[in-house]
Image (cartoon, rainbow, N blue to C red):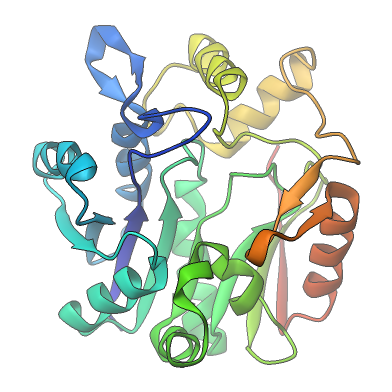
Length: 270
């Protein structure tokens, strides 16, 4: 089985421009994207890592990040995330793609191998973590399932790919489920306040991939609950075609999908 990782990143962001290149440790000249790449490198089962960005001139600046971190680069359509994933899979003749998004600096790289193994051992189409803070999970996707969606869906909404592939009624989905539920918290980076949280966490833990493992972040939360804030239940989560859903409804929907999944394995994140 061949596995490739696709770190999906662009420089455009309405609320936090150039966020993926923002320095999380100026002394080490390390950006958010550098940390995410180091997280992907924790896996021993990923054969190749790609930075997947667009062909737009504004994303030219990301080319150096790929070369400096000794990973591959793919540039494709700006509004078709799934096209970039499928293209990389075809270039590499991959069986599975690991999707990591560029705003998830705290993605749990230490669980990537376990996710991949769960997929292979159980012939799954999809695997993610559940019960962890928003922004902590990567997604492992079987290429045959990915191509099936690519042929059917409106590629312009494929940034919402999770909503389509995490469908236990259609695909064989697997879950690594946290023994404690922290899904009401967020550690993804969308706003200046989110980036301030990143800096506070790194101030406590450092910026290495090993220091930023999910267990360390959750222990920090346990000992310093003032650092983290629950996402308000009435926060609106964006959906395709300018629709939205309340955050509490979104969480309930996700839990229902977990319950209907093919394979659920518990993990201890503390």
